Length: 182
Image (cartoon, rainbow, N blue to C red):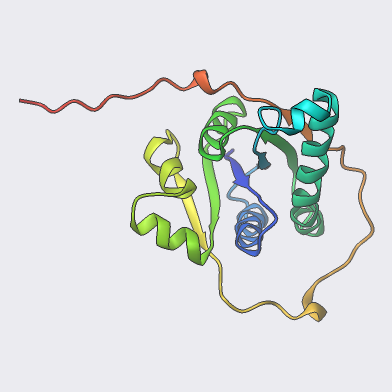
């Protein structure tokens, strides 16, 4: 069956991508979902002078878990088989490397209004992922209206394991060089 990677940053647009993937799961189109949150590496900044690498990784893990929490609730409510991961690195590269490492058959990304503007210019994470991906990429256009709070279903937390913190090496994808044919 098909396995999808859904990139989640905690935004409403990424949650609409999660809802789309949950719908596909309920319809029987896919067998598993890989939730991925990408954290920018903070060990190269000033924080590394004041904190150990373990403390920085713990902060990245906490921020990643916070971003994945609502997405996990949506999938738990739909009884979806999923795994959650927190990747460290540049967003587009990490998404592509995670999709390859997890042997995903597709990638689902949520589009915010700003991401749509950047995509028109050929920039932004969704455009980079689409250009370099070896698997199909689905972009989910988030509606502008917010769902009223009475439509959300609150259930007790489940026994899903904590997301794995994974650093994907950026060298695993070969660079492609397009040459002009003469």
